[in-house]
Amino acid sequence: MKKIALLACLFVSTSLVSFAQMKKGIVTYDMNFSSDNPEMAMISSMMAGSKMTMYFTAGKSRADVSMGMMGTMSTISDQKSKKSVSLVDMMGTKYATETVLEETPAKPEDQTVEITTETKEILGYVCTKALISSPESGVMTVWFTKDIQAFTNGQNYYNSSIPGFPLSMNISTNGITIDMIASKVEKKVNKKMFSTAIPEGYEIKTAEELKEMGGGM
Image (cartoon, rainbow, N blue to C red; front, side, top):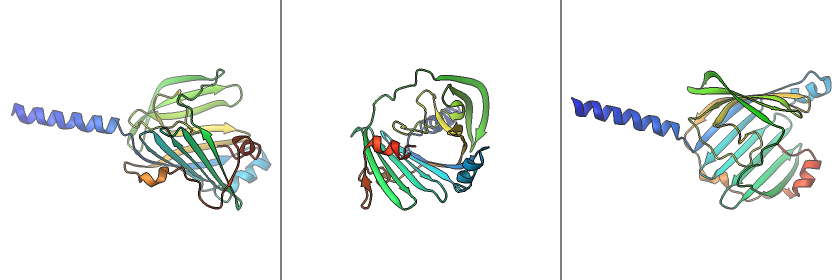
């Protein structure tokens, strides 16, 4: 009887560790854009039905953002090659840029992070509320879980100051509010998703040119 109890404890313990150390998979977010500014609200309406899909494995990640009628954006990061590639397909125009991936992302000096004691469940994961404040962006609300550990370097929607993986984010930037909440979590991912090869048909631009065009995420 003691052996059975011990085996049961080991099984439960192993299952919990496995769940807590999820380091590869796919998380899909529903995205909602809104604005009080009539002009920006019109742009927001064109982005109805937007989604972001985050693929991750050890040392690699890819974020695909589909912005309704506006187009798509992808960012692929590879720690081993120290490379980050952005692919932008907007209104029929395709361009790409390559940048050097920083091993340790720089943290804005004027940014403060408050980890609260408030929790809620999202897709079965217990999430903790965090508030990220800065003079430029105001307050960003993040709900993160420690049960998913993803490589997020080079992914602009993720903040290295948060001690976990976000399943919900509320961001206000450039007069638009973006609400993101995870709608699906998958534990398998195809390695082909992390290729940093630039597809045919994309014009290569520098990071500076991409910023001037407003193509940064």
